[in-house]
Length: 147
Image (tube, rainbow, N blue to C red; front, side):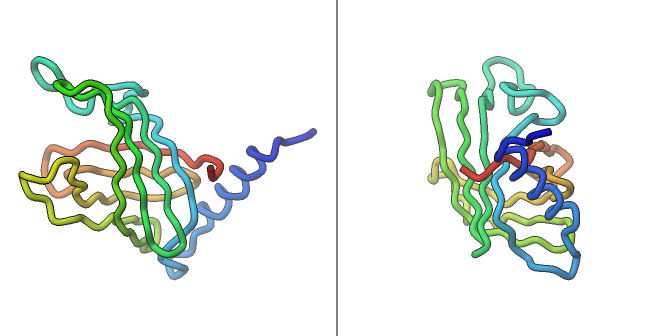
């Protein structure tokens, strides 16, 4: 039985993430692709609102060993059409929990990235937006071969 290079890479990455030691390193090198939001497959609305709403078409999350995170998100904005935004921030992992650190967000800064928290386990990364409030959105990523 032959496995493609991509499948072998995913298998190796999944085994590394599955065996991530809670006392181990606080950074990893990985690439994730968004699969769903609150259990809804893509493309999907970001949040149920009356009238026009933002639709998430795709999103990638890349982590590097230096503690940098880059999120590239392709959206159909309700009043601006299709747009792709890139957010660069830093992160750290403690055990199976991951924290993307927030930037200072002001009303005058478009596309501001706010902090996100989640879990990384067995080749999956679940990232919660608005994790400190009662209204939160869960982005469900899966590991992908590094680009």
